[in-house]
Image (cartoon, rainbow, N blue to C red):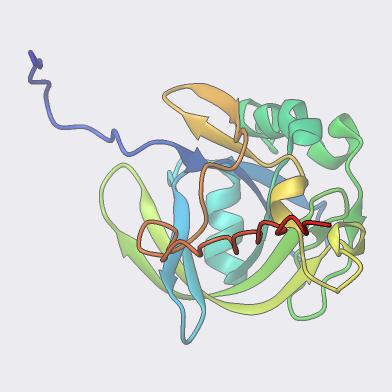
Length: 201
């Protein structure tokens, strides 16, 4: 199997494409699309986002110390892309995309109502790494859309149409191919049906 050797670079794909909302007091809220994001700790729950210092949202994040991660879906793909290629210096992204800003419970940055999940975050540390600075943050609250709760109250997140970002493209996540631990799960044998004996008369 032949492989080429490329120069060092970021090739960990796919990634979540999330819309991060932030806001300075007295100013319009803004949205920045981020793919450099993820989980860093379960207990306490912590996440990170990495942002270029040149981005309009960077100073807002740095000054306010808070943000909201909003998960994205197929229906939100165009808005997700728009918020990644247009600057909040020039446009009101909520107005231009038609998205709805909703008041959060723990932070001043708004939630995006159309997102299936909103994660309120408070920044605990900033790491200046190079082209991007990483904001480590604790999760303060999680909001989930009730329309994805089934009759038993289980949250069916994967039925919301989540999208991912991979090598310059937005992708539909597709169908399920397994569940956590399925590779080691013992197969249950189906009970065999007993054959009915013929009764001679």
